[in-house]
Length: 271
Image (cartoon, rainbow, N blue to C red; front, top):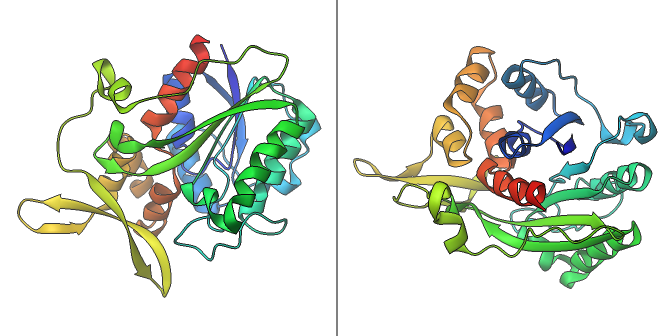
């Protein structure tokens, strides 16, 4: 069984999908105290906020795959487009790279926004690939859309790396037809778009749904969980634990669509 370490795990969308694919989580880290509380409640385990910059990579147990969706605020079109530099949120990519350098797991799976292609005129995307290469990894990537599984229009870049001495796992490319056929077929229905909105003076991604009675409206928190492929019980457990709607909305927005992670994991396991 492939094992993985879940960096920047948030509410646990990556973990849920990869465990469905037959992989096993051996640990992880997250700095946000509310996300840690939710993660602990959902997985029935203790979860303390941990800054990845303080993680001693050498003391971590061995694992086959490092999993991380590194913070995207500085790459997103909804952000300030500062790019990936040391000391920025998106610069935490270099902390994930530090763990890769020390642990040298067979694989990694990473995720970020398509804005990475254009920030700093594309230089940051090139540097990201170069960073992985310098660490000894061959890298494949593809922009995947959650709508291939869920009624949710959400594009993200997914990277899968493998140590150069290993054979290349057959993960990408995917096509929409691959994903909506067979057991992965999503229910037909209106696609919920991610649109730019204002919250406290800042540009954010807001999720909308098409309501036959009320027209286009903002999605409820439970709907946002469902649009990421998360079980309803996650919402109810977090609500019972006293986590605010504001924090739950933030977690859903920052999370990974679990069905996307599941299908990537299934292909990696099968390779």
